[in-house]
Length: 548
Image (tube, rainbow, N blue to C red; front, side, top):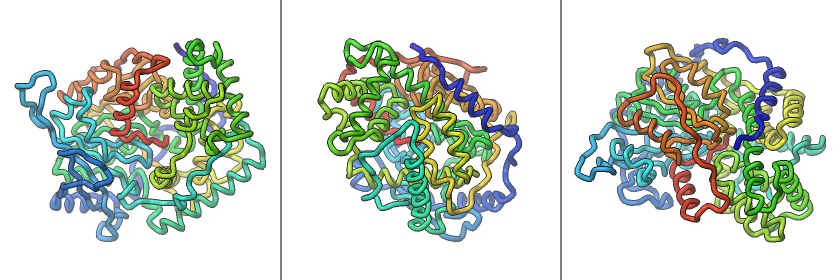
């Protein structure tokens, strides 16, 4: 099943609306970065000498036996490595040395595998626990699995922009074609949010950037005692992984970039977000067609258009009366947006919508209502996401630019466009200086061969980004999961993809040219409960709280 590719039309609209500069127009390493590079070398040397004192983890992490935690110090400002230091929390599970297919064979250790799940704003602290899953056991036998909370996240010098008690605003609206009064209200909120970030974080706010995340990664490498880093980044993690490869190519051993952000400096981050909104329209169409194919189960309509009509009916009902007092159109949209990331979520979302329209709101409330106990984590993640993206690159500062671009895009891609725009709108009023995005690029032989994994219909990081990443990193190889749209495919349900991942991480083998795998099967309309639990476990361990 392949829905009409509205992304192509919408993507063309973006390209004609916003003229892109040549890929090499930005400086490869800005002059201002020289001091930071020197500061990174100083911090890395200190970290190597100090190491990481791994011990018991915080009790709220609920870590099993064998799971160890520690901290590594990094400069807040790499231009001043002797200035204020912040501590990043790190987790590790040692290599098991156990071959899952041969109990008598002891697998030699290959070092550490550091993982970042993306965001910005997601923590990878639970990642080392993933070694218990069958898809990861061979990798866990050879590598110490290492996760960490990037700067600003969780206990790693956490950022905050609003009081968490006031972060969730539910029920909320999510108009696909907002009125002028609604736009004015969201502009007011965006300005207040940007001011709140500065008020609550102060002068340190400007130091939460992708470039500093890349520098932190090199300090972590040194603290772990590694001369060269084996790294796997998903989603946003691919972007600062690519920054790391550009800044420190000789420090890379192996690198996996899973679901690649388009690293073109002219697209970071305003245009990347427009293209993401366009791509979600295609994925939303995929989901609607799947629901229509299973009309005998859900009764939401036998065509994608009829499913859209059912969804719109639910929006109208929730506009008049929120489900459970907390689920309005905004919460419904959020629940269905997550299905654009992971098709494992399709059955539960379709079932909740079906039941709601038949008078049972409980499944929808369970899926979509914000939980007070998660407010602090959600607020922190959103603060880091906003700070990093706003700091990383210039954004349009005039509302008329945002209004023009998103109004035009919403005509062909209404599902996600305005929600995404308003989420990022604080960047128009950002109170600290922005950087110029680094020109991600490596020449032949500068960087060890790198593996890029990408689903062809990924909406969060559209496929064009993987092609651009492949072009910019010499000697990289792209493996595509065809006609599939899951975001983050390494170590997931596709055995072909996992074969390429294992061959690379365990043996250093890559195909000589681009390769592809058939897409994994679409979910069944009533997935077994154990399959759902398995998916939730895999994603929680990998830290897929991705904001993008």
